[in-house]
Length: 342
Image (tube, rainbow, N blue to C red; front, side, top):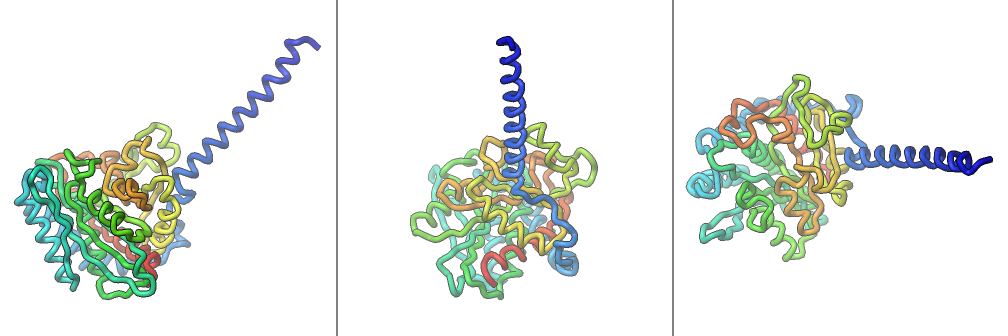
């Protein structure tokens, strides 16, 4: 046997082994990103259409989005009057549900900004804290219906529905300021200040749920876009689903939330657990909690990967799907109840 034939005997099997290794590695990456869970099966879902279809819920969601995005309008960092109007509305809503409202104020460039927060004190393990948050500011000159009046609307409605319940763990609801540029991904974000305060106080945060742009859905083919072209082989082409986003460390927390969510609604959802190498994975307030070592996830309609009105004057209340937003409330309510130990 010649050296050439011996080389072939070694080379080709080695090539096959390399191919198999890359193939299975890629499959594992997909599983890791997806969290091993795609859309809920009908058999797994508790039928709660009577809950999510409640006109009171949909009307409340629509009312909040209209007040923030239409009556108040742009709520950017320079327009403190509008920011304060939004903060006042959120505070009054929290108060009307029976909560004691607190504020975390801080200054940036000699201007004062504030986070608004309330709490349901836990019982058996009150030291364990679950944080649910959404930012109420907008990009300059935009009404911000989807980004992020939709998140604030779900936050308020969830707080209303859970107000009279008792839990083992403590739940905190927070409306954050200054998520948008020029403070985006900086230490001046309201969520960064809040997470920092929790860290300094030694609070045992079990996890944070970030509500970010969750009101825009499309049913037509090829309405969903992706950061990488190969994602189209993993995720649906229709923008009709909610996306659960986590980093690798928060994957377990995300799977627990998913488990409860799918028992509360049949709204389709997808998942991704990845690093910030994937554009968009850390594009909201959950990033601030990652920076302080806390588990955190983002619930989103994928924003600019779907919504053509993102960060434009066209991000108006009439573009949102309030029935599907109510489904988000239904699923999230069930997930939080399970997580907090009702």
